[in-house]
Image (tube, rainbow, N blue to C red; front, side, top):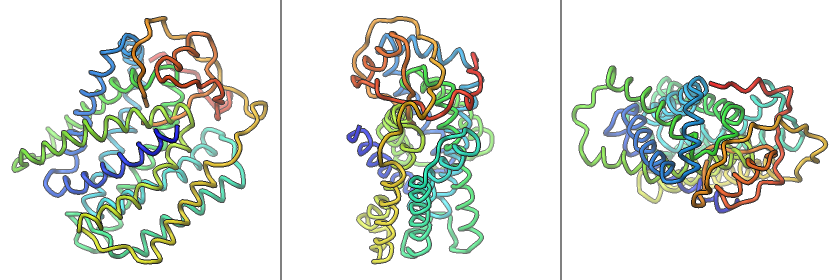
Length: 365
C-alpha cells in the first residue's frame, strides 16, 4: 500500500510538470484528448491480456449510463478544467488547487453521502486546505501559465476552471465506488476512458484548431498518456477501492509541492522562500490528521450491501489496478478471491465507509 501511494504521487507530479510544458504548444483540450486516448489504448491492451480483464470489460460496458457519467466527471470535465486552468495560472498553482480535493471530497461525503466525520478529520482537512491556500498566496515566485497576462481576472478565471475540474473529480470518486466497485478497475477503465476519449475527441475536432502543433509535442502528449496517465489511473482506482476517495485525494496534497520543486529544478521558477516551506509542512500535517489514526470499529460502520458475484473466470496474472480508491468489505467467495487474485493483496479487513442507506440502488446500466 505505501509503495502504491508513493508511486502515484511521483507519477502525478511528473504528469503536472509535463502538462505545464505541453499546454504552451498544444491547446489544453488537445492535450486532454491525446493523453486520454493514449491511456485508453494502453489500459485496453493490458485488460485484453488477462482473462478476468476481458470478462470485466464486458461487465462494465453493459452499464452505459454509469460509464457516461464517470467519463464526463472524471475525464472530460476534470481534464478540461484543470488543463485550461494550467494554461492561465501554471502547473504548480493548478496542482495546488487540485490538492484541495480532500477538502472537497470530505464536504461532499458528509453532505451528499452521509460519510462519518470526526474532529480529527475536520481539523486535518482545514489545516491542509489552509496550508495549500497560504502556499498559493505566499509563493509569488511560482511560474505562470503560457496564456497568463499576470492580471487578477486571468488568475481568477484559471483558478475557477481548475476548481471546477477538482469538484467534478471529487464526485467521480464517489460515483465510481457506488457504480463500479464490483468490477476490477483494470476492467472498468477501458469503457470509461474510451467514452472520455470520444467526448474530448469530438470537442477538439469541432472546436479546437490543431494546426501548428509539432510532432515533438504530440510525442510528449503520447508519453504523458501512456507512461504517466495510464499507470496513475490504475493505481488511483485501486487505492479508491481499498482506502476510499478521501484517502486517495489526500495523497495529492504532496503533489503541488513536488511540482514547485520540479519547476525550480528545471529553471522555470525561483526557489520557494521560507514561508512557503513552512506552509508545506502545515499541509503535510493536515494530510496526516485527515488520513491517519485508527480505523473505525467495524460495528460502528454498517457495511454496504454485498455486490453481486462476478462470473467465474480463470485467474489471470497479478495486476495492480485502480486511479481512484477504496473497496468495502468483499462478501461472497468469488468476489473475495477476485481481489486477491487481481492484486495479490488480501482486502479482507476492508470496511465500507458509506452506509447502506446512503447508497442509491445499483444501476444495471
